[in-house]
Image 1 (cartoon, rainbow, N blue to C red):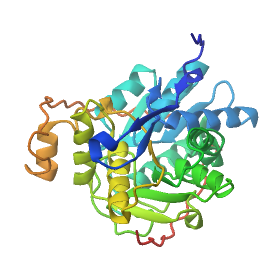
Image 2 (cartoon, rainbow, N blue to C red; image 1 turned 30 degrees about the vertical axis):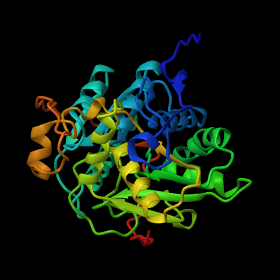
Image 3 (cartoon, one colour; image 1 turned 180 degrees about the horizontal axis):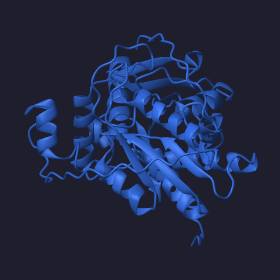
Image 4 (cartoon, rainbow, N blue to C red; image 1 turned 45 degrees about the horizontal axis):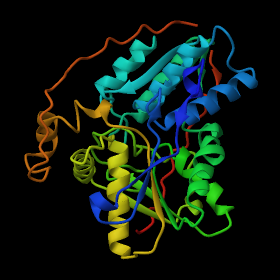
Length: 358
């Protein structure tokens, strides 16, 4: 029986689900939500915080600040509470209410951005707000998950070797693309491995990460409204883009079999099943990474009114209509202290990427 004294010391990341009985195609789903932060973001958060501590950037009295759509914010909230730091998460209106409440329960402040950026997303506006905070007070330390090499290093050191140890004959790996930290860490590891592994990035329609046209995206987690600075497309073999309606259908299909997963996982599973169906291969060993679980999505993708208002009455197949009551609550924005910035407040490149054909 493990005994721990810090919440980030526990992370069960060697659980896989065989999706063959549910979807009719062989795919092993690596579950990354069984830790006290509830998502794969815990790995990158620990790597970035502990690196900043070793480098002397993060010291007693520092105030952590990060832009996050939810999961990274929760992970940093948990670590900050454990280590005695203050933390401010800058998010936007798409962040699930439960994630915002979790951060506040852990003692963090949450500021919600409502202004769209030039690509119709919120990321640019969130980054601008973080930069303004850092300029106002030198106590703020921005880890910058979008540019921080610790983001992908965590998965090069942990996530990819975990998969390799369980599946020594791995043929194809499906990884969702947000900041692309998980994608790049795994891709770099398997480029150095003893056998070729096909790396398939799964993105959401409306994301511009791989050069797609910007469009409305309502499910947080995957996709970006600017090109991810960490992304190296030469390490990616294919890109599959998934409509949000298909994300929702995959989530509900899993839930009808007792597996409640988040929107990022629904996107990855939908994209992987589409790829496997088109390639018609029966003997491949295929693994997909499930970033989080579904409890934080009960008021969105598992809530009837939210689904019908955004996607229409026919978004779900018969028998898949949920019955979760609507929840609505808006947190107050925190006050911004006055005072220069330390840490990783780097300028983000805004180039356009080239989408690979699936």
